[in-house]
Image (cartoon, rainbow, N blue to C red):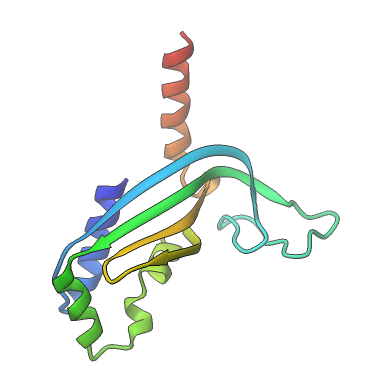
Length: 137
């Protein structure tokens, strides 16, 4: 998945004539209850207040996402005539169903909390189940 993310972000930024390299690392674990207080799957509902009758979480993956921008990439983004919001990697990831939370960054390396809900990535669950079955059998 990190290679695909790098390709998607590179293609997207290339549309704005920004060239460079971005690499991703994911450190995620499956959890059957990921909070939906700030984000939810495409087919779900957010529940900021924990209201009765609404789910308080969904199954999926949570952990950390880290990405590194090449120095050239960073300077191109800073010089871009485009609105910087359209170049925001977090907004692009959210469109893909990858939700980033709190985190930090430097000039070129950024690390954030991440949530991927199972229903947005059904093939990930299939792969996880196959791996678990392989370990058990």
